[in-house]
Length: 177
Image: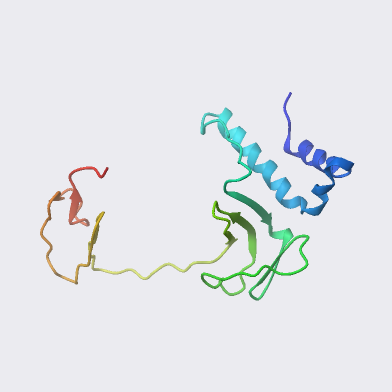
């Protein structure tokens, strides 16, 4: 017997009408349907050999809910999710691009109880202008070396000159643990 996302979505609607599952009416149906889509793709990836068997989320670990664009209202810097009266109090890490409309919003809760909002928007990104010069940086495990323009850098311990890639000055000779 194969269960389809469409059938399970209809089952959620029927389940909301039962007395024992009245709490399902308190939340938006969009995150519930998104969970079904994620579950469907997880099992599809498992049966096609692209992933391990799906593991279910625990009640007291990281949690998340995904809202699609039809369940989100964004006015200025105020974000309101479906079935909420007031907008979320958000401390923005960076502004959204002008005229951006979210295609999905994921609200996550980490183990320490902090909430985070991730907003997916579609944006036209202009390509960077081409440059003629190249500078190599070694972002090692302990130190970051800044290389001023046209300054030759000699290999340090654990590094050798790489002649096979003319754009890279040096490569590590041993693997990091």
